[in-house]
Image (spheres, each protein chain N blue to C red):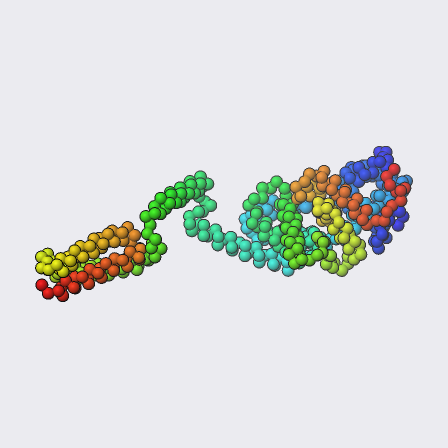
Length: 225
Length: 219
């Protein structure tokens, strides 16, 4: 695969995809703008109004629209299917409890994902505390993720998941939200309460770090001239 | 647009569409930039491996259940406050005024309790319930009526004591009556105080016993 030295079984795939110029590549907000659909559905306000009115169908609609993505993000943040389900469930309960405080400063979906991310970190902290109480001497914050979709490439996925575990919290969040879940930087900024520029910088840093972890050392020639 | 390898990181970070096109063009002739570009794109592609957006209707069923439960719990809590009259339909100003009044009443009650604590009998903890109190008061009235009849029978002997013993009985009855008056006054202030009622009963019994002794004593 040329000089791209990603040391995994996915070399061929990466090489070929890179050659194709895949649809979800940088510049993220511009070139992929057509593909990176905004997360706020057209009926975002109606959805928020329905939830505010206590209409369970509105919550069901939210789940239909974002449930799979919420669960996927939670699983990637928590590394466990059952914890992810707990996090999504808790998120819906928090939405129901806190919907009156939603002021529409961001989209409703963005607000929901912000709650999800915070819930995941709350769950993770409580899990770490439980671990400490049971004198588990494992130092890892993230457990080895559980097997997922049978079609997924196991080595590639595992390598990436391990590498993600080495990133800072913000880098991991931004990478997952942008690259995996397809959110825009503006949405990520609203979710994580950071600036859009900070989101872009964090993604850049995350990808640089991931590349460093997943690739063998490059030759001096390959460095920026 | 002409770009060099030095522009690469800036474009990777936040380049415009034109700059990306120019970088692609530059990478066609530059192996280092081509490698960087491919690796960069490869990470995006690899990220797709972490995407599993399969539907999970079972999870929604769980969530729906928990949402319903939460609504029920919330309704139960709200019902409690509404029963107390704290409806959200009351204007905020009135709610504030009500709360202020409540705080004032509680404060005054607290102050009253603090300043009157020393007058409270330690036996006050033994409080009589309203129904029991009514029963005690009714029985007490009947008992007093019976003792008054006894006192009326003994009155001639006591009014003109013929012996030192009778004079002593008279004196004793005056002391007992004084104690009864005092206890009745206290019981009037604390009608639910069972301890006071027991003391009063003991005094009535003492009076009854003394009157019986007076009547049994031969003039």
